[in-house]
Amino acid sequence: MPEMKQDFLPINGTDHIEFYVGNAKQASLFYQHCFGFNLVAYAGPETGVRDRASYVLQQDKIRLVLTSSLQPGGEITEHVKKHGDGVKVLALWVDDASKSFNETVVRGAQPAFAPQTLRDEFGEVVISSIHTYGETVHTFVERKNYKGSFLPGYKSIKGSFKPAPIGLKHVDHCVGNVELGKMNYWIDFYEKVMGFKLLVTFDDSDISTEYSALMSKVVANGNGYIKFPINEPAPGKKKSQIEEYLDFYKGPGVQHIAIATDDIIKTVSELRARGVEFLYVPDSYYEDVIKRVGKINEDLHELKKQNILIDRDEEGYLLQIFTKPVQDRPTLFFEIIERNGAKSFGKGNFKALFESIEREQELRGNL
Image (tube, rainbow, N blue to C red):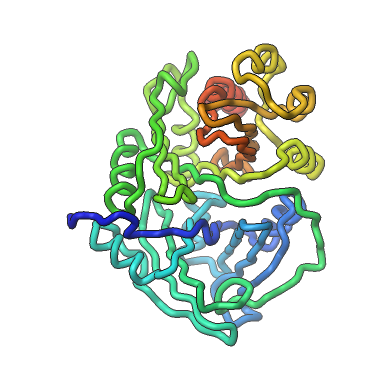
């Protein structure tokens, strides 16, 4: 492989995340009602697209695209049949989608599609795409010459339902689950092919309980806007959450999306009021948490009431909580995170979270 230059793949942030789902119309209402997203664009038969319907939702800097097939065959139908509802596209906002494609392909990326220019009355967008773990792809989106609501081919739309936003700001990180023995392969991919740097490593001594364990490494791009933890199972007495995911997703894929907020107590309170379910940690977690993490600005009683977890690193502290899976298969879920200086991922909470997930696995008969 050719020698890499620093920042050969500059990334401005997450452009959008596209889900392939069984019923995009209903899924879009779920994310509007429960998560406070607004419907901003649509593509389907009414816009000249014959094979699918896509709903674009937005809150602050977060864009979700929910896509369903209109036909019994084809890639979208097969994806949903195999995986259930799940993430297909982790799209990255770049200044030059052609250069991003060429630089990654020459370093070993498998092309999904070559650069193409999409045009409408609002300008043009250049997109290209490469494969990553499982059936997930990274699409590079260059939109500097575009003024429309999303992409050419989509019609700007305002839904009749006007949900109040709940304080979700931007994508903090996206986590992928891969098969045993494949974590280092994909970390190597992100380092060599995309120029990311290894940020942190967690082994089974960091993330384990009496019954199960996992291994995890985190890579980030140059400016730190994109962070991808990659998990694989580790040997344990019983089935780990990663194995359960791989069994039900039928292969590697996106495990969870972490979304940042500036006021996690308010955000989580609103999510609960709208019907979102979260993993539970027992009250005993809070007995010595302040001794472990030190002074925090929030009221511990309110954090305990909302079951929000706390951790600290050298640069500050963070608050985090995890939803239960947002579909019937125990696969994709969301993390809500508030960072108060901390750059880490809540290592001090791993054991409590793992035990919480194991309780859910046991209820499902999958531990």
